[in-house]
Image (cartoon, rainbow, N blue to C red):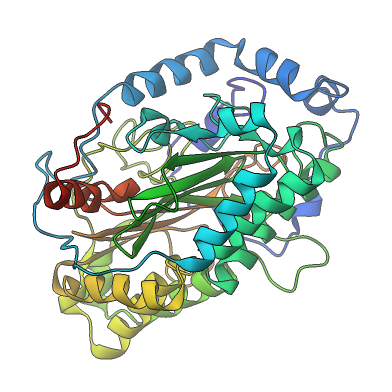
Length: 437
């Protein structure tokens, strides 16, 4: 069976079902580094990011991918559902919440620091469709806000201060590590103009400091955050965090080592009956998968960029069929997925997850003993959290491996981007919507 190149980065090996499951060895990502003079790398050397993007999208495969994404982007927002119908009443918004003072101070400082032309470029109405324009390739699909690479040092510091003020300390550390890993990848392949620690766009939405809902967005290669404050509650979703490689030589552990450890501990604890329900496919490239289940860019994860309205039926074992220790492990996985939220906000969000625990499903693809690449999804009425091992893009591994990982986080049934809460806030205040989101 041939392994055909798709566009110079992707190959058919990442899509095709295999009778034999992919097995993990002890190899390092360094064993999959391309020679710097390999045409896959050398062809891009010396190009600035704009010329790289122009050439990157001048490809039939990428053109088709962009056409699909743009069609999804033009759809009015509904939210991810299990059957196409949004389930109402899942996100009640309490009265009396107070704005986050630290976030307010940080964004006020940013607005003072930004040069006038950048200030004009960074601001959007609360209901601007640009919220949904984020993506995770190393080239920008849509131009939104300001690019950190184009800002001076004081402006970058002010942007990162907004990010830090909005997240938990551990969450901010995870974001900065992700950005650093992107810079590390740029160094490994000697393409720092394409991938570096500032390869990200930042935008503000709404009117911070007024008590009205507002938020910010940061996105670029392997990182996309959408942070919204509504009546004292925070939602950070959609979230996309990934890395290739998922660790540097200086790192103590891969980026998602703890979440993977918890997931494998849970998977190993499953009884035979639970395992039969949980394991949807025995391999991440199981030949029994229906055509199209593995996407050429997203591979197995279903909640990535431009998937705001996707219909995702439940799969796997129901949490109500797990014992107390297993449910605790499941909750710890979900807590790690919400690590970016500050403690009080995370506790409130986890309480909403707990309220639907008996409706929560765990779907698993691959072996449960850690011998293979894995995909898993925790899915409830108020949560989708995924982890997916991927094939190489800038590394040479043609099959999924643990050192290229994508994760997603969503609030299904309409609260991505805080939309369910914003709708309730509008109903209480009589504030009209400004745009067709």
